[in-house]
Image 1 (cartoon, helix red, strand yellow):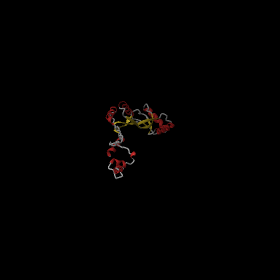
Image 2 (tube, rainbow, N blue to C red; image 1 turned 60 degrees about the vertical axis):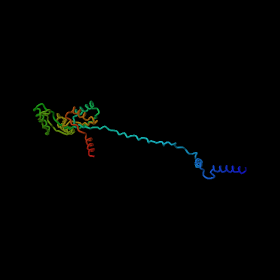
Image 3 (cartoon, rainbow, N blue to C red; image 1 turned 30 degrees about the vertical axis):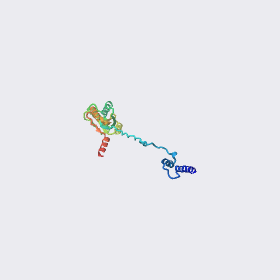
Image 4 (spheres, rainbow, N blue to C red; image 1 turned 120 degrees about the vertical axis):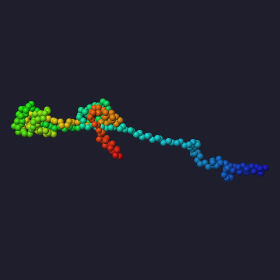
Amino acid sequence: MRILVFLLILVNLLFLAWTQGLLGSSSNPDALRVQQQLLADQVKVVSRDEPPEVITPPEKPKKVVEVKAVDICLELSDLPIAEVAQVEGMLAEKLPVFKSERTAISGTSSYWVIIPPLANKGEVDTKVAELKQLDISEFFVVQESGPYNRAISLGLYTSNAAATSQLERLRKKGVRSARNIERVVKPTTASLVIRGPAAQADSLSQAILGVLPESKPVVCKAQSSAAAGVTAE
């Protein structure tokens, strides 16, 4: 009986030692995993058999390319002021999308010191005699037909100042009837530069010809040079 009790106690002790791993590695895999855990309380579950979230980078804003409208530039050169005004009025009324810029071109004048036309040949002869008595020899009588026929010319000058000086000298000598008049050799004109959408270039050309049938618009120099540069490249 004592031997049986002793055997039971021995068997229990061996079983306890085996379960505690005192008799070598345990064949229980779960027990082994428990022993090999390090800081198990700090382990976090990242995913549960789910694919990682795909982060899509934000799309870059597309660059907007601004398409500029093509303009045309035409020039009308050396026009009388009245004709320039006609074209400007036409643009304002019919083609307001076109803008114009006027540049005045100064005319040329001469200044004429004369004794105004006399009524007849007798008066001319009398006036010539008076001039000679005043020791004035540089003059001539206008013989051509026209508004200055039988006038007496006392000098033609390119500047008003020079003509005024001559008139003062004559008056000091006693010539009271002389006058200084301006003779327009070439009147003041203007050039007109017109800019606007190239899509309406034909309408512009037709409208200009409707106002000035003899006009010949040309492409502005700046635009022509730019076009030549692009072609050369």
